[in-house]
Image (cartoon, rainbow, N blue to C red; front, side, top):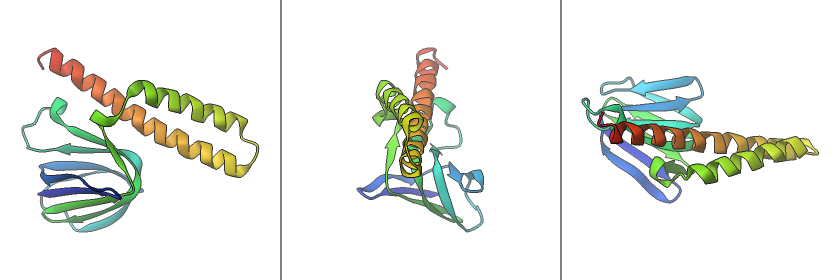
Length: 146
């Protein structure tokens, strides 16, 4: 099936894929060829793409996204988000530092607006840390020969 991940900057990823795992408002879903048509809201989380059926887990592609929408048809998945970061673009040390700063901001928030802003930054950095963790685990698998 055809996959397309579109951000405000343009097409982030596209091509033929076997499956796509998406973080929807109703929970995580896996889309395979022949999926029923669906239009759904995405929540902050990880989009995981498997290009071919036989791809091992360390060949999966992961993208951190922060909400958006997905349109699913029998042979296509189109994801529209403001931004997405691939695992190759995420620096774990920077993500960890941003997460710690966001936690500090939440702790020091003086009003609801500051609290909501800090929580948004926490959610964002948590997704980036999740991507960094997946990247690290997959690098270990690659170097171990799995």
